[in-house]
Image 1: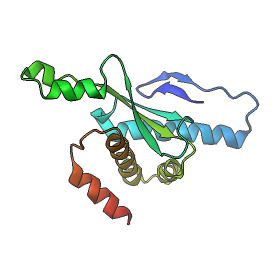
Image 2: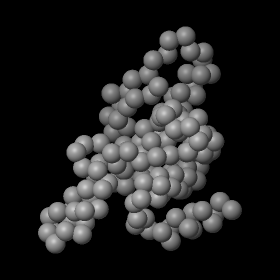
Image 3: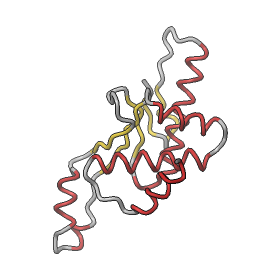
Image 4: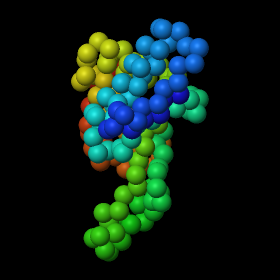
Amino acid sequence: MISTDCDDFSTVTVTFASVSEPEKRSILASFFSACSLKESLGERVAKVRLTNKLVSKPSALSMEGPITLEMERYFRVSPSEEMQKIRAVRVLEINANHHAFEAIKEAYEADDKEKAANYAKILAAAAELVSGVELQEPGEFVSLISELL
């Protein structure tokens, strides 16, 4: 499993106990692909994490810290402008075994950063929708999906 904060490459933790050379390359490609996803999503999520917990879904949204999505929704309708600014710390979890992540890795390895970024935005929007978050740019999401068809 890969554990890291993509903003600080000194915190990378990868264990290669009895792992073949091709598997090592694949693991490192996954790591750099995940960091590339975080770059393309900007402030939309605090972190991107590869996970094996997801079985059939390509992505999910989880929270870090004391604020949940439900609390964020509550604060948004508050009359206080300060409370309306309170946001949950979002972590995009990506299923490392899903074909959607394989497509992102392939785009990244082919140096097609725009395609990889578009896939990242689609996975982030899908995770937001499943979590009940209203999309900030629903038109952009529809355009990205339409480009794939």
